[in-house]
Structures are given as C-alpha cells and as structure tokens.
Length: 365
Image (cartoon, rainbow, N blue to C red; front, side):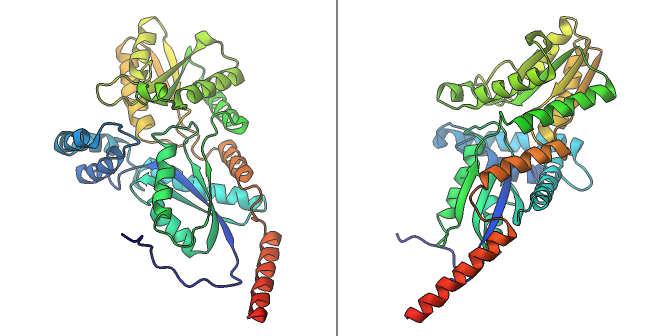
C-alpha cells in the first residue's frame, strides 16, 4: 500500500525559514469528569511504552476492567485539585512555554514556542502541524521530563516520529532527552527548597519523591532510576545534606508488579514511626504541579505521615514559573538550538541567500 501523506501548500522559493520549540508534557484530562478521564487514561495506558504487557492480554483488561472502575475514582482526585481555569498541569505547562519564549526573546532568539501534551490536548501532532503551517523548518522538541525514561521521553519521540511518517516536507528535528544533572536545573531546585525553608522553617528530614516505573525497566536498560539517583545526590550536595538527612523514594505505583523502591507512602509512614516529627517532601522529577504532586503527595502523603504519628508535613511545590527554573530551561534550550539561525540578523542573511539562489535558478531555467 502506498504511503498517504497529508496535503501541503506548494513549495515556495525564497520563503524565510523559521525555528521553533515544542515543549512537551505528559498530559491531563480536559475536565475532571469520569468520561474525560476515561478518554485520557485510554490513550495513556494503551501506549506500549507505558505498559509493556502483550496487547492481546492488556487491552481486554484495560477496556473491560480498569477503565470502567478507575475513571470515576481518578476523576474525583482530579476534581480535588482542579482550578477554575483548568488543570494545574496544563496551566503550568502553558505558562512555562510562554515564559520560555520570553526568555529566549530577551536573549536575542526569534523562535516560536508552543506546548503540547503526549496524551490529551493539545496533541503533539496538532502542534507540529501548527508550527509547520507557520513556516517552521527547524523544530526543537523539549520534554518536561528532566530524567529520561522509555515510558516518558521516548514516548514523546514516538509521537513525533508517528507525525513525521505522514509529512512530505519534513522540518529538521532535534530532541532534548534529559537534563537531570544540569547545573541550572539543580540550582533552581535547591533555591526553591531553601526559599521554602526560609519562609516556613526546615523539617527534620527531606523526602525526594520521583514518579515510579516498573523495576523490570531498570534491568532492561532504562536509565531512569540512575538519573533520579544522580539528581538526588547533586541536589543533596547543593543543600549540604548527608545521607541520613534525606530519602529518595518513588510514587504512583500501578498494578501488582514490583516497581522501583522504596515506595513513597510506606517511606513516609516509616519516618513517622521512627520518630521523625517534621518532614518536607519535594518532587524533583515534576517541573510543574499536577495530580501526582498536589493530590498524591500533598493530600494522600500528608495523611499517611500524620496518621502514622508525624507532627508536621510540608509539601514543597514544584518549580512551576520560578525565574531560576525558567532561566535554566532557557539555557538548556539555547544550547540545543546551537548552530540553527535563531537571531534576526541570521534570519535576514538566510532569506537573502535563499532569494539569491531562487533568482539564480530562475536565470538558469
């Protein structure tokens, strides 16, 4: 069967080329209802990058058992953190993309920045279509995931390549796969925690909770666990913490398989039971607050710690729109844009050269 490519306008000689950035996050339902959550979870949990169970076994379980029973329960959790303007994850991702474009503009780069969601809307394909329609011939794809995982970062790349399979005139594509050990990112995290300590006091122990993945992914070559540990070590060193003053844990376990350990909620209970009265919790792997931080940690984690004898639980919010984080994200993006003409003078020179080539080709014909 012949390939089917989407129709495109005729190629125009002399058209100015443009550079764009697509900032990609995981995704969120459109609204906190069972129907919307079901649509979102169906897309998310059907991704073979996320659940590596044979499709013939997994899909009947997903559609026959998990979605009918999980959607309403998850919708209630989303409703508990939903804002009048919408999903916190979407609001923060949108704001970060706008601030990133502003930072790049202040540093002399003429680029368009859009955000997209791997699952839900706006989709990666729709935003790539929009950028291409606006004349983008070079697109840098930046994931909102500091630590690389096949379940997240690679899935974003899958979505981009699936889009590219139906495009005739492809733009140049680059990807930012990881920045778990980026100095600016680590410093932004440290400043966020230190500011929290100045404003609210310092707890007896710091828990760094990362999103979990099945343990088997570690043994199959996924670097996620190691990159989380490196982020934690660098952050602890920046804060001047020794090994007894912090815990690295993993949250959001799903199903009965063994996931990366230690798990966050049991770790919080154990800390309370051994006499830690005041605990601070931060989620370094999330660049914007979302269901997993606001509800799972800020509500469920807090309840688990206090119910087990703890006296005070403080959740330290994500980087969100913190200026230090936006500067770090801008610097990461700027480095990966290296070599592409993103400044006005470069664009002008490129357009002039393109027009000269078009004129020369016309004269030859």
